[in-house]
Length: 441
Image (cartoon, rainbow, N blue to C red):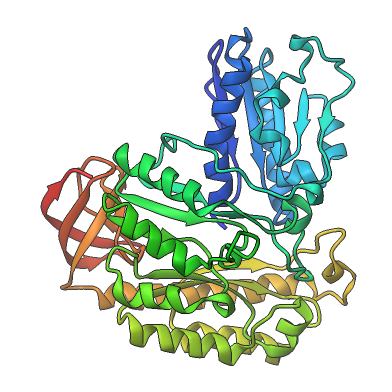
């Protein structure tokens, strides 16, 4: 999961459509589809413009921040129409519909259709019908919506899959996204061609449970086949990156692509969640700790120097000190570099919310220890790159990412360029790099 949108400052102009995105890379991609559909619906013609919130439901804190941002947007933009959608709107529509600041609530399926945005009083709709949220589990397909750009991004995200068929005991997301549905391979390839043709040097494939891609498509192609097809049919793609994957579902073609395709970036973010077998079982995960460790070892043999990130939850219900130590130790045992730590918070409606809870103070302590372990591992990783030469995609203000997704500072360079640079050291947070030559992305 990417960082949540915080301190949202929407600079409102008459007739402008602003989209505020919370949560994951899939939301970022969908926000561009939403912007286009809202324009087609005619929202830009509204005198006060519109602010659309694409929310996240992964934690209670994500929902709280969305509500806070909505209130601020209304204070700053009293004439604007405020529309709320995304996972939190799908799972808690009544909560957002009850907010005086909100004009319309749309579900995750509705948000991708232009006609949904016309359900406002401005278009002659009864203003008491604020929530338009259908049963997400009734959705059987995911359309391949085309976008030309990702606003404010140096890399582009492409949706390949949506929803999830698994029911991890801590997760509310299937109730926001529905069951797993794949975008047809041809539509994915065409979207990648379109974005690469518009100058994006790096494309990131994203989904809710991306390694389940293809199970519902004719012939059941797997993620590895999709990756190979993209790289073969879109030679203009210079860097192809995967968002979070479930290692237990990694197929042979995917492993072969990791080993043999230099344009597939040497960085994998793993959905580990815990390093303890009993906690993994209580989470209803499908892997055990030894399988995660072995996966990282095997992939390193295929692609030496590959970088691993992971999601880990601290303080899951029933987690003892010994169980937590297993999670702490897996940071080193898997050689994790980019760690996303989530202090467990119960989500109403999930089985984990009914399990015996760990004291909040202890949850926070364990999360802090995990973050410290992750930070120490990251600094070791930075030190290991000193003296190396790296290809860096510039994102903004002279900052960019290496192929292994490590942050680097290069001084002034244009966003979207890939720069070859020598690594001279680091400051504990990013690499310090000296550019050799830049070439347009």
